Image (cartoon, rainbow, N blue to C red; front, side, top):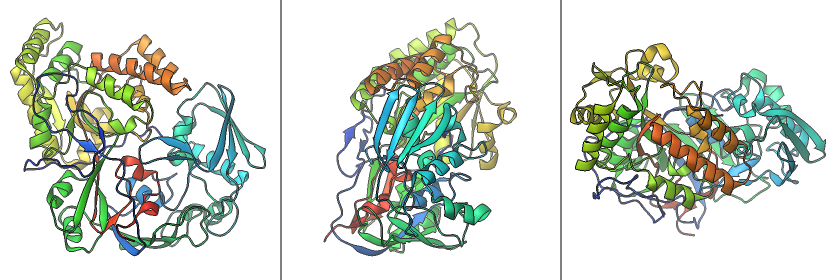
Length: 548
């Protein structure tokens, strides 16, 4: 699925300084030039130290109860956080966000429009039955059904067939370089056909078991109370160190209290408020990992930012470092592209270097940046003659961004007005054109599920429902299509870097900061990944005690 879900991230009222646990890839804080200022430089680490000892039970917190454990019908992050430990995929996203074959042991490409998958032998479902090619083909066809969450990921697929006892062949209408990455997500989940069909419409609901082959099996779901997964006794792979994980849900102060008192052992924190409230608490460790999530400004159809010169001017004038410190306590990083470093699942050095070459998204605008921005406004052929309306909700972080945008507009001779709406109405801005008819730019959160930057840049092709500003470029469209069909990683990376350059020059979106994944965990536990891979990787299977 081309994931355009937004991450709810509440802001902070107090500024904090980030001291991320463990060293990791230095993603760079300059975000493309500007003044040489002292801004927080996030140290992201994809993993935590390896676990040494077994644990009987871990109590884990989600911010919401899963709506369903059938990810074909409801792809929420709560359900995925649980189920990724229970169900396995044909490919696997690793903690470093790279992708490798998993239930597939060999990948063949006789030509650019054919993918031959040789399946792993010896895999069994939790009921003891063996995984077969028929189960895999059934699962793929189920994911591809028009009403399922992953259906759009199969848009280039012409045919899927069983071509051997342990072989599936997929034929494409055109080359699709991202399809194996898709199979590391929910489109690659493999189900026991017999059990899914037996459960029917009840599959994935409380009281039902799972139909999977992973290191844990679903052993209980008490609606309104908890979900329990237990180490699968006959798992075909490596035995997890933790025997049982009990999931409960809480938000805000309840979540903070549960972790502080030891009633809960860990969480992947969605809210920056949660992270701030838990910093320095005795008995807890915090880790920050790569993510694809970015805070960004998205211009709308209303037209206040229709002129690309005005968009460039605004990008130059926004104080990203100030937003990071006062709105998010230093826990986000000024950023120049619309997707986070977690998307760099290959050719990381190439993408990091390209990010740092972008020059119109300074961490903190210099006097020269403001002068250039004012000149762009003066030369704009379509400068707005009314206030630019900035849409946001009431969360502190987004309000800080909105105020920073209004201040930036004022610095370059334009007026801004903030429109604050309730959370439910804010969510409608993303999918309903009429809902955003009265705003010129949305303060947005955005992430993608693929560890490939091209997964965000197709939002700017002509006619895309997410291309609100109406950006059109035949060259851009051709290059996005070419990148999506380029199977060689090095060649695709070069194309993506040029696409990124075009996107940034046009300021289709105006990136503000990347948001890391945050893992808060008992200081007696370790092993779980800290990156966004936890949504697709069996993170609990790596979890255990620090000491043997």
